[in-house]
Image (cartoon, rainbow, N blue to C red):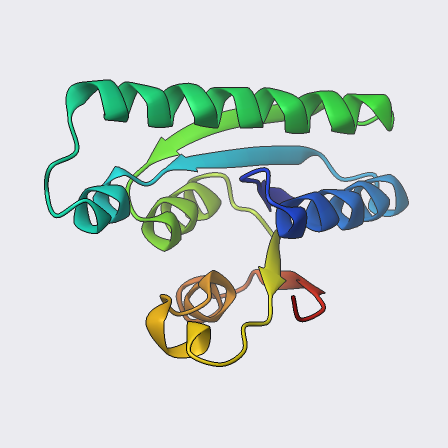
Length: 143
């Protein structure tokens, strides 16, 4: 089972669901935290410096550690991985290399202009890319 975790409320809800599933299925858990420097660089008009890259990686490591600790508190041994690149690309590569049968991601339904300005939700792209894997999307209510 692969958990995509970035520390958001959506990811925390996904972590809770992942814990429940792991205990019920006796499944091992791999946690992925993505350093998406590609999107961050695009949002900063290509002006992202070395210090910012380091900060992104540091934040991802901290977030990953938090997820591992929360799973351990629930009696689940999990292995963590930092991956780099666009989130959907990095998660797809990782899921394929570890043969993840179940991928758990968090999602918040957007309303208004946010639906048009944001990237496509990750679970839609993962569903197209990960043949043979079950994508579990934990959705939070509208903000």
